[in-house]
Image (tube, rainbow, N blue to C red):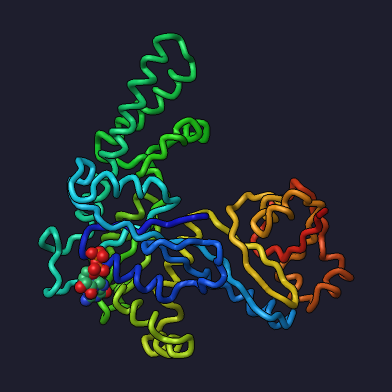
Length: 366
Ligand code: GDP
């Protein structure tokens, strides 16, 4: 189950954003077997294609794809040395698949900033420093072990040590592991180290409620975050956490009106969910029928049997083949039967790599 961790300094709006996430969150009934801890929020991935399938199949229900956000509170300066929740916090980050770093870009005299002023780049660097220090600790421990192994002639140990030396040089300069240019082989070698600063990261620029419509282009703090993010190849999502928590209280119709009034097409939360979805390297395949139309989340590059396993392990085990029609072809044809007549329903075997928007029916042995 894929998870995005929400991190940031205190008082930047993490809890406000997280509250919006849980309030707007996915229908818990869809996840009967998930125990949900208080710091975990499941979100639905907005997908217009589901509605189209729902109408085509006159299905009883639709179920969107979903993934999890985890609120990781407690990062302060000195966390890597055990300040605040310190190491516990860092271990939490180690477990997530991607990181959304919230940075404060709103001026509000009533809300103190832990560092005394609004300066998102300084904040990002404080956090990155803590994460880099934690990575350095893990790295040095490993390097010590490898040096011993290399002395006794282990070739792989030597190769890995060389990669780690390269990373160490970057960390020494306060650079993240993800900024180091590594080949696929090198990445493989260090995979197990699970470096915090190697995790895919996006920045959430939290702006004031009266700036939601303009901040993305006009707020100077946001512009600085964007420039910074560009150097890392990271995305920036501009939102007002406070507005998002208000929107989360509304029903769908009200929310639409509210957004239209502000001249927005989608909520900040929807933007964030889509960006996080991409960041995790996820894509969607669809199943459709009179009982249910559903979107399923898989990692890009997943084979057909593995995708089937998302639905049920029995379907993966007994996989025979997948009948697949591309969503656009299906819609153009008007029905599965019509698509079949046009030869657009393909039979794919166990090596097939799923594509985004594959409308799929799995055949399997029971
Ligand atoms: P956390 O410590 O990062 O979890 O921050 P909180 O979510 O508790 O927010 C800290 C304070 O900032 C609270 O008083 C929030 O109401 C306020 N806050 C959060 N987002 C916004 C925003 O978009 N605009 C304004 N004006 N205040 C906000």
